[in-house]
Image (cartoon, rainbow, N blue to C red; front, side, top):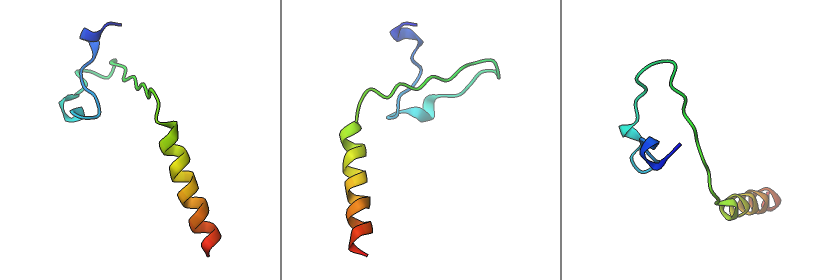
Length: 50
């Protein structure tokens, strides 16, 4: 797989369209665990405030 194989990213995902049912979509999430932690903290705080 090379950079030329990348068709779209989350900023222009509307450009992506499968050409046939045999094509495979691959998703790579390279980070952002701090956002998960912040969301969990918010939910926990909201839960405890009830």
